[in-house]
Amino acid sequence: MYTHLLIATDGSELADKGVAHGVALAGRLGAAVTFVNITEPFPIFAWGGAMAGYAAGDEFAAYQEGGRQYAKEVLDKCKASADLAGVRAKVLHIENRKPAEAILELSQAQGCDLIVMASHGRRGLGRLLLGSQTAEVLSFTEIPVLVVR
Image (tube, rainbow, N blue to C red; front, side):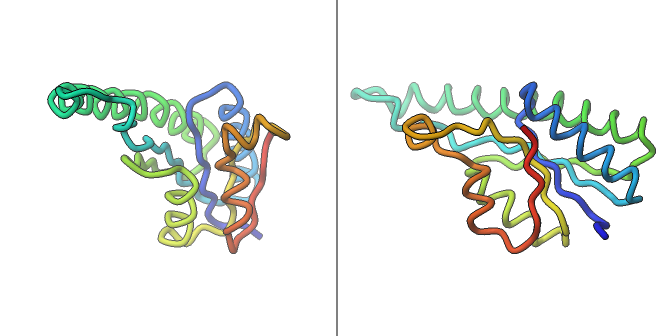
């Protein structure tokens, strides 16, 4: 049924449930998995004042390096869980992208036939203010999405 799952994770406890669910499903189906962690763009508009460009340069470098280190930790953990389950898996870290856009593009580029991701299930004003990457993926994808809560 499914042969290649894209499992998106931000490393949160809820995302870990999505990872576990996706790995278990892939194991039962004999499917391959691509794990992805996405570092969002640096919040450049948070900086103001005359020295913003200079201060932001150092902060930008620290932000990128922190994102890379965090992604490595998260993705190493995901890969270890797949290896333990006997699931073929690769990991990808994508920088400076909105998660939903990166997930949609990557699912097509990698030939995935199922996206697995978690959602907090926010409603009302909370969803409006915080946004929902899962809702955006659901709105624009052409392949099935398994949402774990």
